[in-house]
Amino acid sequence: MTEEKFQKRYVEIYDVVKDIPAELRIKYGVTEHLDRTQAIRGIGDLDKTDLAQIIDGIPDEIVIKYVKIYIKKNVDQAKDQIFLQQIDSLWKKMTQKA
Image (cartoon, rainbow, N blue to C red; front, side, top):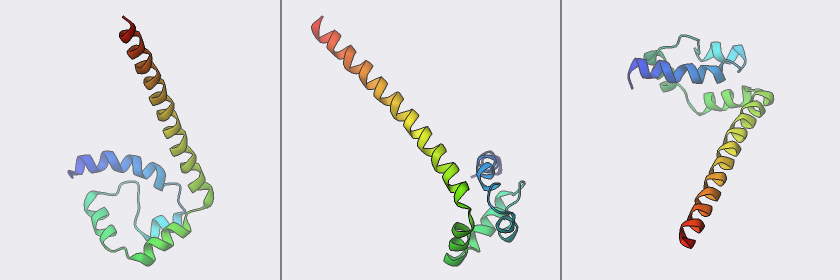
Protein backbone atom coordinates (compact mmCIF):
# COMPACT_ATOMS: atom_id res chain seq x y z
CA MET A 1 0.00 0.00 0.00
CA THR A 2 1.37 3.38 -0.91
CA GLU A 3 1.83 6.11 1.67
CA GLU A 4 -0.90 8.16 -0.04
CA LYS A 5 -3.41 5.30 0.10
CA PHE A 6 -2.45 4.61 3.73
CA GLN A 7 -3.05 8.23 4.68
CA LYS A 8 -6.50 8.23 3.05
CA ARG A 9 -7.49 5.11 4.98
CA TYR A 10 -5.84 6.26 8.18
CA VAL A 11 -7.97 9.41 8.27
CA GLU A 12 -11.04 7.16 8.52
CA ILE A 13 -9.39 4.89 11.07
CA TYR A 14 -8.21 7.78 13.21
CA ASP A 15 -11.77 9.10 13.31
CA VAL A 16 -12.60 5.97 15.34
CA VAL A 17 -9.30 5.62 17.20
CA LYS A 18 -9.38 9.18 18.49
CA ASP A 19 -12.23 8.15 20.81
CA ILE A 20 -10.20 5.57 22.73
CA PRO A 21 -8.56 6.68 26.00
CA ALA A 22 -5.51 8.90 25.62
CA GLU A 23 -3.28 6.58 27.67
CA LEU A 24 -3.87 3.78 25.16
CA ARG A 25 -3.17 6.06 22.21
CA ILE A 26 0.04 7.27 23.84
CA LYS A 27 1.16 3.79 24.93
CA TYR A 28 0.78 2.38 21.43
CA GLY A 29 2.00 5.45 19.55
CA VAL A 30 -1.26 6.30 17.82
CA THR A 31 -1.15 9.91 16.71
CA GLU A 32 -3.15 12.00 14.32
CA HIS A 33 -0.23 12.09 11.86
CA LEU A 34 0.95 8.48 11.97
CA ASP A 35 2.75 7.40 8.82
CA ARG A 36 2.77 3.99 7.17
CA THR A 37 6.23 3.00 8.44
CA GLN A 38 5.36 3.88 12.05
CA ALA A 39 2.08 1.95 11.79
CA ILE A 40 3.80 -1.16 10.44
CA ARG A 41 6.43 -0.99 13.16
CA GLY A 42 3.78 -0.51 15.87
CA ILE A 43 1.58 -3.35 14.64
CA GLY A 44 4.60 -5.64 14.39
CA ASP A 45 5.41 -5.04 18.05
CA LEU A 46 1.93 -6.01 19.32
CA ASP A 47 1.31 -9.33 21.01
CA LYS A 48 -1.82 -11.01 22.40
CA THR A 49 -1.47 -9.23 25.72
CA ASP A 50 -1.29 -5.85 24.00
CA LEU A 51 -4.38 -6.60 21.93
CA ALA A 52 -6.28 -7.72 25.04
CA GLN A 53 -5.28 -4.51 26.85
CA ILE A 54 -6.42 -2.40 23.92
CA ILE A 55 -9.77 -4.19 23.69
CA ASP A 56 -10.32 -4.08 27.46
CA GLY A 57 -9.31 -0.42 27.58
CA ILE A 58 -11.95 0.77 25.14
CA PRO A 59 -14.93 2.13 27.09
CA ASP A 60 -18.27 0.42 26.52
CA GLU A 61 -19.79 3.70 25.35
CA ILE A 62 -17.34 3.85 22.45
CA VAL A 63 -18.05 0.25 21.44
CA ILE A 64 -21.80 0.87 21.64
CA LYS A 65 -21.49 4.05 19.56
CA TYR A 66 -19.73 2.28 16.70
CA VAL A 67 -21.89 -0.83 16.87
CA LYS A 68 -24.96 1.39 16.47
CA ILE A 69 -23.34 3.15 13.49
CA TYR A 70 -22.50 -0.23 11.93
CA ILE A 71 -26.02 -1.59 12.48
CA LYS A 72 -27.68 1.54 11.10
CA LYS A 73 -25.48 1.44 8.01
CA ASN A 74 -26.26 -2.22 7.38
CA VAL A 75 -29.99 -1.82 8.08
CA ASP A 76 -30.13 1.06 5.61
CA GLN A 77 -28.30 -1.05 3.02
CA ALA A 78 -30.66 -3.97 3.68
CA LYS A 79 -33.69 -1.70 3.23
CA ASP A 80 -32.26 -0.49 -0.06
CA GLN A 81 -31.62 -4.07 -1.14
CA ILE A 82 -35.18 -5.16 -0.21
CA PHE A 83 -36.57 -2.19 -2.11
CA LEU A 84 -34.50 -3.09 -5.17
CA GLN A 85 -35.64 -6.71 -4.92
CA GLN A 86 -39.26 -5.56 -4.79
CA ILE A 87 -38.79 -3.41 -7.90
CA ASP A 88 -37.06 -6.28 -9.67
CA SER A 89 -39.88 -8.65 -8.73
CA LEU A 90 -42.51 -6.19 -9.92
CA TRP A 91 -40.63 -5.67 -13.19
CA LYS A 92 -40.45 -9.41 -13.79
CA LYS A 93 -44.19 -9.78 -13.16
CA MET A 94 -44.94 -6.93 -15.55
CA THR A 95 -42.73 -8.32 -18.33
CA GLN A 96 -44.11 -11.84 -17.94
CA LYS A 97 -47.69 -10.61 -18.43
CA ALA A 98 -46.78 -8.54 -21.48
